[in-house]
Length: 475
Image (cartoon, rainbow, N blue to C red):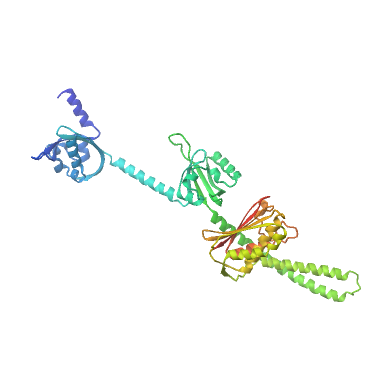
């Protein structure tokens, strides 16, 4: 054996992959019916679990019949007949093994040489990786919370379905905006940005974000810096949770608790004030009988005492009425009709002040259960407040109704002086008022009536620009 042959033999025997050579066995018509083993290296012996002496001189169909089942025999025949090499990854289950192989075959004289590598472990890792990726992709795209990937400028690169569902943007639209554009208040974004650059992450940041239609969403935002990718470009992963319903529910609970506490205070005041007030009125009547008519200014002072005693009594009654749950006479009816009837009650005021009334009623709206008289009282409070907040000649009062999911919304807007931000949270509290001579019970009564109908109220206001009340009723 020459040095070259010895070298080739050494390479063959010590190769890390299995190598076998075969000679074609043909029938009288020249068709290949089997292959005879010519050479088998050590790696091949190890992979198939057989000794080379048991294979050499024997045939493929006898020693490795699994090649027929796996379709490899036909492929080898094609390699020999066409002369074109074959390369593939094949799952082989037969004989005493069940493995994945990377197989390369080339024609060699009237036969072929095949090299194969056991890639079972690699395939297992790849499959596990694919399953893991599939799980994470499913988590990403099917999450109920909005999830996004953003670049250095916080422009959205990838978003899930919840992101489009919550904010109403299409994929094409949202790729043109950044996270900053979603923030309603620029100061909120500045605080968010500062926190992110300080800690390289933001956790549970609460802010108001704006959807495509301009609707405000109360959200909690989390943002983390992902490891730089191959191009050394930072990317960020964020999760946005819409807590608007929770916020609304918390607010309703808070108002219910306030109303309950107000009711307790009102009943205590009524008890403590009405008894001495009654005694005072009785004593006043007795005193009027005993004081001679000729006493100077006696009637004047009696009238002052009587008028103020009546005033105190009226205040106590109104406080009790504003805070106790209403007994409703519910009837299925159109909110549009109720609003129109209520507007008629303030039409003269609007006309006298030379103000503009703009009405927009969505038709048709589902019928809802309302107490006509109570709702009129509630709406009258809002309309009068709006009219008093506006200037004559330039005032514009807008009414509109529309449906959002399972709610009907009545929006009442004015272009008046607006409400300071610090006063918005106190708006429905008893005795809170910014009007001279006002008792501060009108909006408390309004809130109580709306809540008795299982409705809710949202107020948006800007100083110098006006105020909008969004009154929601469940369908």
